Length: 316
Image (tube, rainbow, N blue to C red; front, side):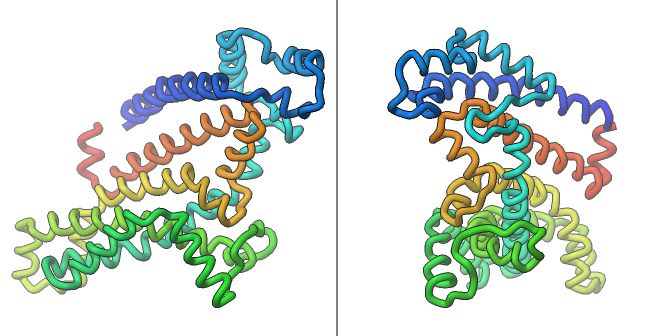
C-alpha cells in the first residue's frame, strides 16, 4: 500500500508541471497588462514601464516561469498585485465558501441519487425505472446556471423563503450560514445527482444479478438486508469513483454558480483575478485547484481498500 501511495504521489508531479506550463503560457499570451490595469488609463508609458520592471514583467517568459516555479517549490505562491496579501492568503480566505457549497451540494446529490438509483435498479423496466432515467437524462441536459435562475425566481422572489444572493460565514451561526447556500447547493447538487443515479442503477443491477445474491434471496434473506447490506456494499466502488469525480468538479467548477449567487468563493476569486490580470493569483489558484482535484481522487482511491478488502490484497 505504501509503494502504491508513493507511486500515486510521484505521478502527481508531471501533472502539476504540465498544468503550470500551460496556465503560465495562456495567461501571459492573453491580451492585457497588470501594470496598465493597476495604474489606470491615465498613466504615462514611463510609469507603466517602471511598474512592469518592479513586478518583473519585463523579463523573458522563461525567466519569469523559472522564478515562479522556484518560489512555488519553496511553498511561496507569490503575492497578489491588487489585494495586498499573499496568494495563499487569498486562496484560503475564499476557500471556506467554496468548500461549504461543495459539501452541501454533494449531500444534496447523494440524498437524491442513491435512493432513486437503488429503486430504479430494483424495479428495472417499470414505469418507475423509466421515470428515474428520464429525470437523470433531463438533469444532465439542464445547465446548472439555468436551474439556479429558476430557483431564484421561484423560491427567492416569488415565495421569498430564502435569500437569493450573498453569503454569511459559519461564525454567524449555522442557519445563517446554510440559508445562503441552500439554493446554490440544490442547483449544483441536482445536476450532479444525474451521473451518480445512473451509476448507482447500473452498478446495483450488475450485483443484483450475481449468483450469491440470487442464492441469498432464495434462502429467505430479507430484501432490505439483501439490498443495503450485501448488494449496495459490493456495488459501491464504481459509485464512490463517481462521487469523488463529482465532488472534485464541485470544488473546482462552481464558478458560474458562485457568480450568480454572489458567493465569495474560489470561483469568484478566479473571475476577479482574470478581469484584473492578477497573474500571480490566477496561477496560484489554478495550481491549487488542480492539486485539490487530484488529491480528492487519491483519497477516493485509498477508500477502495476500506470498502473492499480485495483491493487491499491486490495492492500488496
